[in-house]
Length: 312
Image (cartoon, rainbow, N blue to C red):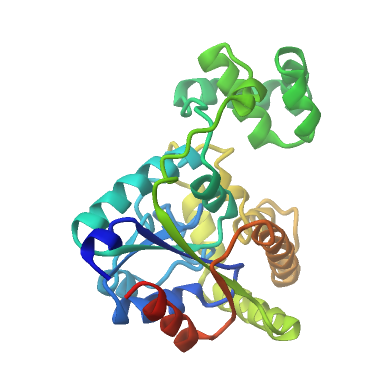
């Protein structure tokens, strides 16, 4: 295929947790002129290494993963941030005669690429801190009542104990004086519509094998020092207490152990349960995506052959 045609191509490699997406991406990067872009809402942050199953530093040095290990955790990287950064990286990849390969399991990020996003304002650290302090003083019920008053439509779809989403909805209102629900009704413009997506879905073939891999993965994380990593992150200055990465799987459970809310002997089982639940949610998202072709786990050669036929 000519370079001019390649400048419109984007490859996505979409799959649930523990389906060897990184291994597949590196195999493909050895074969084709690709630029790997991570699609993971936790791996994007520095310090969040073990619990996010971030590729080892040696791998990252050898095979550059854009949007992995890049953002200081004192900041919160939103879907809109991902959307805008990814667009710049895709333009950069094409200028270098490479095809962007977007790899990961954060389905909200992929959904934004496929369908576009609303023009919801970016976060404001000062306002978010004010809301966080109000949460600590008055509790989540007071914030939820505020949300019901200013944006009842959002309040109907947000759970009364969902601190992150309640604070975000109130933050949007305070920044813009507009309801989050109104932003979501606005016309969506997708800057990626002009591109030709080759979407590859990785679906686990054997449920028992996947369950075994999930448990082995969790055991490996705990053995590598998951609790120590979370203690270090929790001790960082200026990291928001409502940081979404702290509420992600493995980190949430480790924090519960540190706070005495979960017995350390139950950490492994709880992380496994949370990971299984995440995989179910990921697969639900994936069933609504349009894939060029789907593969079972561990089909590196078949994926390589498909891309060679379709693009290279």
